[in-house]
Amino acid sequence: MPVLDLDPETIDARTTVGVLFRQAARYGDRAMLHHLVGDAWQVETWNDMQRDVLAVASALLDAGIQRGDTVVLISENRLEWLYCDFAIQSVGAVTIPIYPNSPPDIAQKIADDSAATLAIASSPAMATKLKLTGSLKTVALIEKEIVEWVRRGPTRVADVQARLSHVKPDDLCTIVYTSGTTGDPKGVELAHRNLVDMSRAVVQVHPITDADSSLSFLPYAHVFERINDIFLGIL
Image 1 (cartoon, helix red, strand yellow):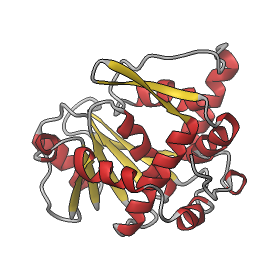
Image 2 (spheres, one colour):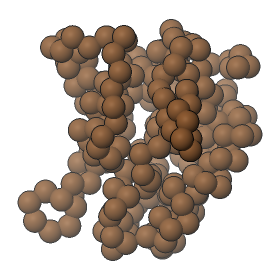
Image 3 (cartoon, one colour):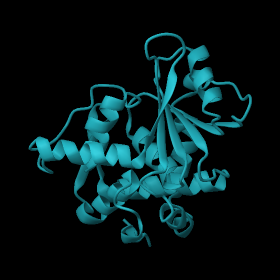
Image 4 (cartoon, helix red, strand yellow):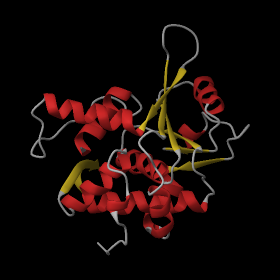
């Protein structure tokens, strides 16, 4: 992997992206996760994840994503979900996950309510659940644009680094829409601190180490899976 001029020490360790990039610097070419491609398991190392996050983050800057913007992520569980999520956070934006089995009317209500400016969808079929109305101007496809962004690699590392240096623990990280008790889904705002502090608390109680592995079994849009599989695993 080419050397990326990214200094993780300038990124607040109390943020989710701070944890990610510091762990990437620590573990390097060690396997971070295994994912299926066809019938064969492939390895994504920590260095691979850092490169792919920075590649997508660079493209998000080119797309005009600003600090505090909201970006919808609607996809099945897959490797790209992870580096798109962290790329959104890396530029100071806010991830809006939507369950892939959500009907179009619910997906559209979430995009409208969160004032999303861009959406990332896994496929053309998934993208049809969203309309380019209101603030939503673009839907990027994992199978098209994201593949190209990753192939191109990180192009604006210094600019992403500048954004990362301004991400603080109390900044909004994600808005999770839950059905609640009645009516339409309601958005729950979670700061970086919420996710990091909860994950740190868990590893103090449960004997989880970097020798353990976890199996993804719930949708990444589900906050339980996102904390206990993604954030906890990274921490």
